[in-house]
Amino acid sequence: MSLSRRRFLESTALGIAASGAQAGPVDPPSGSLLPKRTLGRTGAKVSILAMGGGSRFLMYKEEDKALEALNRAFDLGINYMDTAYGYGNGLSEERVGKVMKTRRKDVFLVTKINKRPGDEAARILEGSLKRLQTDQVDLIHIHSLLGEDDLKQIEAKDGVLNTLLKLRDQKVTRFIGITSHTDPTVLKTALERHDFDCTQMALNAALVGMKNGKGSMVIDSDMKTSFETVALPAATRKKMGVIAMKVFAQEGLVGQAPPEKLMYYSLSLPVSLCVVGMPKLEYIEQNVHMARRFKPLAKAEMRALSGRLSDKNKAAFDRYFSDHVDA
Image (tube, rainbow, N blue to C red; front, side, top):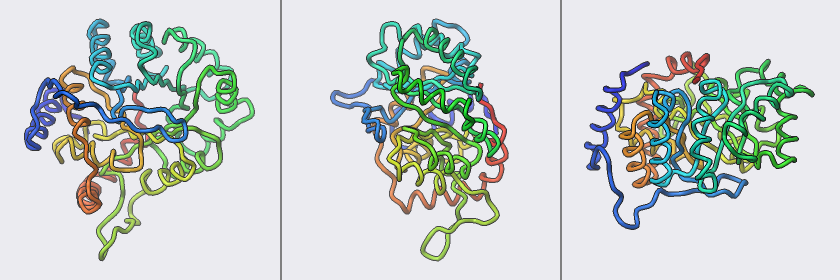
């Protein structure tokens, strides 16, 4: 499932070359902008590509390089920043905050909380505001919903959900959400049961769990359900802002399809944007280049891509993401 940084960069460059696009740093032509979409019922306009602040961002070992990467991403039109307390126990937030000090008004700022007791979550989020150098974030997610027992802890009277609802009322955050890459059915339950503004879920062409039927797609009963077929419809029915993650399956799909096709598959779903970890400046340039040229994939192409990649990968990815922690 893992790939070296070198192989990832080479595979991405090859994919871009195959599509006729130029690999490496790209200066956008005049008038070429990073597209934006409305983040569901929040009404916020966000770039279709977000800068991920997780383990890949923390691969910038030198702080000045990390800050350079953030500024470059924002200069190129990315206006959605995804971070979390759990990314380096606050290190990601701290680095993001050093850029927010001067660029806060330009960025839709998102953090996530991985603690379930409400009092503990409140203490950590107070620190998050200090690390992010702001008195309000745009969105706070409950980080990485697991199974039914985890949902019960979140929903408890003294749990994190009630704390976030209060923080939203107090204008500490404009919106609240929940993320998951573990169990689509439990996420569906959470979305139907509670008043979330947004949700972030694993959405890529290899996780659909479908096979070609006669003239249509059918669920493969030997595979787990998918976020695309179970949780995504629940979110869209409630007009939540939907953020796609794991677009490249933690690099597990790199080399199996052109990278722009992997990104475009996720962006062709009813989502607002996708979050991508970009641990080199070249990755930022390349991903922005692809996102600027996004065109929705035809349904037939999506079916063909998901059928091929799901057959080969889904069972392994389900196992991998069942206990994956991006920290």
